[in-house]
Amino acid sequence: MKEQKITENIKVKNNDLEILKNNFSHCFDKSWDFDFDKFKKELSQNEINFSKESYSMDWLWKSYARLLATDNATTSLQEDKEWNNKNKNSQNLLLKWDNLEVLKHLSNAYREQVKMIYIDPPYNTWSDGFVYQDDRKFSVSEFRTLAWVSEEKAKSILNFVDSKSNSHSAWLTFMYPRLYIAKQLLKDDWVIFISIDDNEVAQLRLLMDEIFWEENFVASIIWKRKRWRDNSAKWFSKSHEYILVFSKNKDMLSTNFLELDNNTKKAYKNPDNDIRWIYRMLAVWARWTQSGVKYDFTNKEWKYFWERLWLFSKNNLTKMDNENKLLFKWDNIYRKLFITENKWKIPETIWDNTSNSANASDEIKVLFKNIIFDTAKPIPYILEILKISTQKNDLILDFFAGSGTTGDAVMQLNAEDWGERKYILVQIPEKIDEKKSRVAYDFVKDELWVEVPTIFDITKERLVRAGEKIRKENLEKSENLDLGFKIFETVDVIVPEFEEDEFSENIKMFDENNLSEQDLKNILVTWKTYDWIPLTKDLEEIELGWYTWYYLNNKLYLVDKWFKTKHLTKLLNEIDENKIFNPNIIIAFWYNFESKILRELSENIQKYPNKKGSEENIDFISRY
Ligand SMILES: C[S@@+](CC[C@H](N)C(=O)[O-])C[C@H]1O[C@@H](n2cnc3c(N)ncnc32)[C@H](O)[C@@H]1O
Image 1 (cartoon, rainbow, N blue to C red):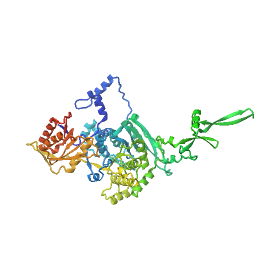
Image 2: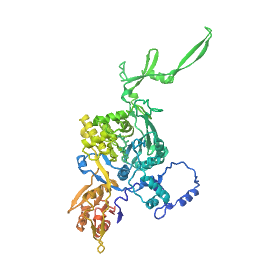
Image 3: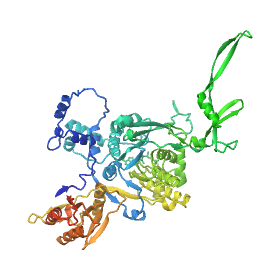
Image 4: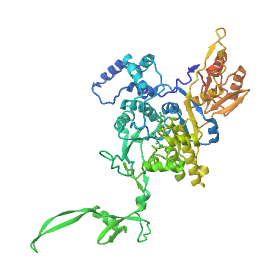
């Protein structure tokens, strides 16, 4: 019988270690500790020289960041059942609490499922209030063993964690584990877009080079975020930010072309009613000239001359003429470029008319009458990213959701092109400061009736209102549009307290109130996600002889109390008789099973000759 702890395995694999294990397993000892000297020797036999000098990014506390990336989740997942029942068919998700924990939970069920990740993390500008904090409470000795550092270093790192720092190192420590896991969620052939400004762009670029690798850098986009120059600025009016684009594997990457925007389309006209439709008149020679002086022997004088440089070869010009695409006008020659020949454009790296921050505030105002969130990105900006990077069925992730613009834009694009893109948003319930953000605070408190107003309440309400607006604007399509979303949140893991009866190991004596029905439901949601079942899929509840089991995708969960031998008989019967019931793994919740019945279950399931003739064994796991 295999044994697993409730959340011990909900963690992300250390990819580097996995590669080493797969290729150099002989450099590991029995307990899978890596023997670096052996590895070094092996490589030097293969004539690889170790140079002491290398190029890499380092910061204080990097070892802590690396540990956070692959350390266990410390929470379980809870469903908002009431809300989700009202949104039964929705495939969109809004997840509450710290994105690091959430990403760890998503790391199996959504591994390589996400086509595009967009994030807009805190920029660490002072004014955005970024300070490093986390809930991990390692002891010095625990941390030393996990991160392989000296006692002194362990102490200094753990002091930093408590110090509420906003240094570059603190910001990198925050970003590293999140990006590390994000990469594993991405499909091989796509991409991550990250908004950032001057404060951390240099750090982020190097960090991404390390996690995604330098050769997977795709673009650094400049976005003009301010429409007007600020003449009160000290040296320069700062009007731009960046979007860094990295792919998971650039060899597999292909971007979409974009449709011409409406402004460009306006330049296409059809003054002579050409049956080939609207066109632009473009010069066939460059505007600039080649000039010089020549001596005119007839008139005996120096003369200036100039000539135009043709943009096309003679052959091409003749071809255009034959196709009736040249226009001779005002002593000049133009070529007709029809819109049908030039419908698409490759995205550029300067975005100077993709809306600006003021437009984003206007969009919030349309939905809420007030600007209740002031660092939102405008919808056309996210739409541009979606159009470049997604197809109609793709899954999109934004784990710094803020006001939820990404969800809004996904729904809008689906309405525009009949798409079925789905989104996953993550937002921490960051408290809204009553003094600094009075309007937002009052709105959430008075209109949404929330006792302690948080940004999460704004995210949720924005998605609801945006969905409603899109429904009203697209009545003819709205039945086919997914305008809802499901909600899940991370909650603390309850570790049940119990004593095993000394005289009879069969009986676990629980404190009856220790594990509630809700706790059991949370364990089920957490485990199914760990076992690769998406959050939007519900487990089937099967009731047999007063005992409920939970089943989906060939996985069977037994978590309720009072499982008896008669249930085991029924279970084995069901496996035999029921053609559509084929568990290949059975997972029992150790705390709720008497040891005797657990052993019986394990032995019977593993030995049971499967009458359906399946060759495959059924795995049995007892999780605690
Ligand atoms: C700049 S805002 C994103 C704005 C968003 N792009 C929009 O258009 O509304 C960043 C958001 O990330 C959230 N955030 C910060 N740390 C987080 C964490 N650890 N987990 C989840 N969300 C977090 C903040 O509360 C904030 O709302």
